[in-house]
Length: 363
Image 1 (tube, rainbow, N blue to C red):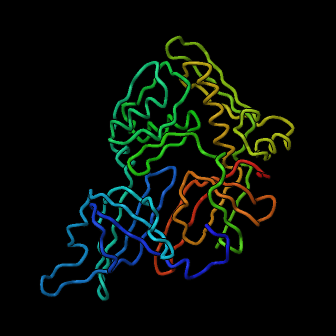
Image 2: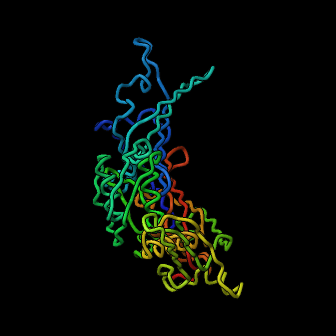
Image 3: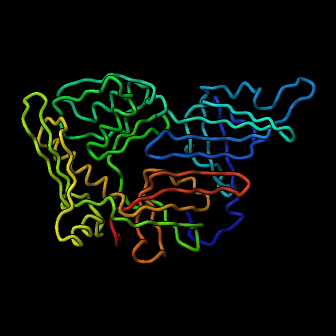
């Protein structure tokens, strides 16, 4: 992503939509939007202006057999200055919904929507239950049972005495629970399941600057959710033994030399600000400490958050780092992308995204 002033020739957008393996015509497409975040399945929306063939009385799009629920959809975005749009699809999933609209006057329209392949995880309950198993083993098995590739599953070290999926727990909720308890994130990209440590410390791939590539940026610093210590008090379901875990500021993940919100809260109050998690089934001391560290890191990730809009950037995806510069010493620095929305329509191609950071003064 260049940091030069915006060049209209360079930023002439282009896109390609494939449905069922076929590249569809761009005629009639009014807008394309792809929205991905770390909490829910990625989603696409394509809006069409309809045309009616007076001879056959068929509409160009809503009667088009290509637009079939369940059909595979790939969306690519980019610019005319590049030989092709983004080399990897910015969306890869399936079509779910067709929503036509007929007004008393004017042109009928059609909105088509769909989700990535994590959507199926919300509907399936695999009833996973195993003993002496790692969280990553459970994630890989859930991926296999849902027809997903498990190469994006990071190996975890702790062997749990038991991991059991609740009767009413979907595969999606099960994976989110496992991830939350160890400070991981989980999402699907293409046909691959990612169950991994947040990639906060990877060198940023993109840099944006105010008054150059940034259209708008609104950061927020808040200590309202910050704690400097987490205590976990649970019990072993097998032995009935009481187990306690603890994490403090010193256990926070690397902060690239910055000062965390937890440290600021502790310094201001003169003593630790503690959160307690009570009555959790826990099988080992290691598991209790891991849960405490994960919760401490999760809470401190909300120290600085922000919303940013830039000229359309197909390389920008959730789960990556960006550098945001020239916004003062307090807020300039590395941020982690929680969500990204790519929109192409009448106003051109824009990318808006949500970010978080857990420290001040990152270098």
